[in-house]
Image (tube, rainbow, N blue to C red; front, side, top):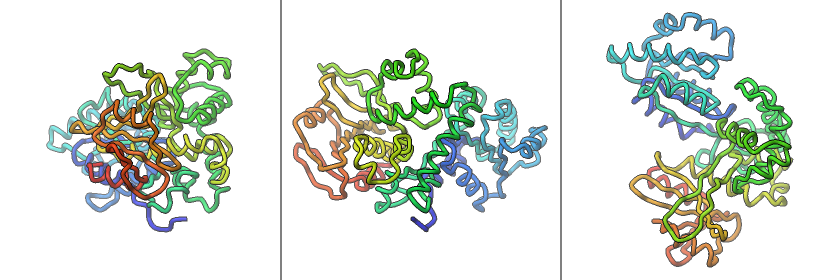
Length: 395
């Protein structure tokens, strides 16, 4: 278990955004460390100590009985509002307060808003705080924050802090199992949808079994005895909660028939393993999901490290020629990445895929740390090497 303080890579970017926008929304699933990071920023000594309010705490809610008066009393301090989507009427109040302060010459760093439901928070904020708010997503721990030696542990346990830092694999697995149950039985119903917890658990588990597969609602709907539209709504919900990623296909102008369905990934590899009852590394390595779990883990890690405004997709033809991740970065740079847990082989179909998408860099990411050329402009490297290259590219 690591004992050094874990510095979150998003911290400097949150501070940068607070220097630009009057309000910053920090979104992410529960238990990823949003509150810890926000408190550190509010109390970092660069300004008057901030104010933290948890809108799930009745005592803090009472302080906002007259929000205009309360916020006026804390002018000049960063106010952190946790679980902001619990009090949607507050967005209109914030707009008036921010606009009044802008007229007085205060243009940045007034509010840090934390939320666990991305779409609802962004919708409410976008409608009332357009032009006044910047948005950032905090995920679980990633490989950049923990170092090369922790990659396998991070893959097996996932990056939720209490799961990764648990004293044993058993404690980690117990925490994740309870996290899943809490989301299903308490958090999701509190956010509005009335979905039977056991039905949603079965759906989430099916997504874990199909990690990295093309989205196809029909077999899932049959298994759950539901219609396709209902299953699609379930997927939308888990995507909105930042628990599942929907990776779109790349569309390029070539004379080949391309798939049109997205691929789906349960975003935290530890949750994948817990949904499938895989509690330690040996169990994971012996399960058919190991390769696709590693693929999803790498994709999440890479997408946390890419430059801002990067567009991510995958490439796949109807005949199965495929690349796991296409990164279209600013300044028209395209990197194409194929993820392999084992040896970095380059079969004909893979060369064909690289030729189809014509990337600036063609990369096979393997499970080791050495870097070497594979011919025809293809590079093989490990995860840390790719992260280093992304950092150099501005990620």
